[in-house]
View (cartoon, rainbow, N blue to C red):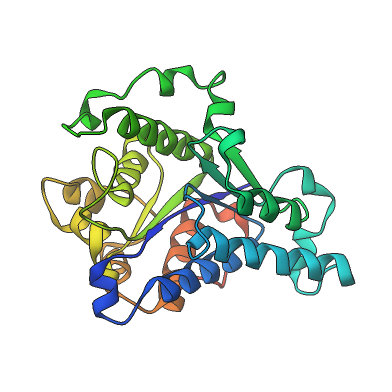
Length: 272
């Protein structure tokens, strides 16, 4: 199953062009809906807040679960979500805390989703990924006052990146100040995608850390623009500049299709 890692965070740049946190949440839900409808898995690494993106995504998961339970599935996507493969969750949220520290909303959302959403505490995975928790490799070690927290967040992001097997990462927004890790979270997740050879899609039109990553030589612009994600240079630039979420989704789908044609996405991307 192809996995899509969605790295999204509101930022001041997005707010200035009319996309506040609520609008960003709607974009995330639309992306999740689209890729779930095409038998893919979506993966997040977000904290839980009542007004946060995971709360919005969880509400969507609950709606899809209720529909599948009520009528056996309506659309093709709902039929696939309601099928016998529920043992493999279609929406995954990895969090850095232990299960005992999970937000109550996260546990309730997982229960209400009917098995579509799974919240995974990273510390429960530590026995299987000791190389990730043992430390952070040199390219990611930067001075920061919260060294322990920074290393923990990097381990979380590395693990999520490795779950994209096969899969890709989409980045949008991301604050460029006040972050807790070694660098802005969206920026680090973009960097890790390139390091681990995962197709990366930058939606830089909303500004923030995503745009900075794609424009600054000190961040990763050369690596991104020379990396392969199934898009031509022209379409990669189009994706980077657009704020039209439907066009962005079609561009990303076209890239994924050209990387993995066996997914059967023909017709959903832009014409070549």
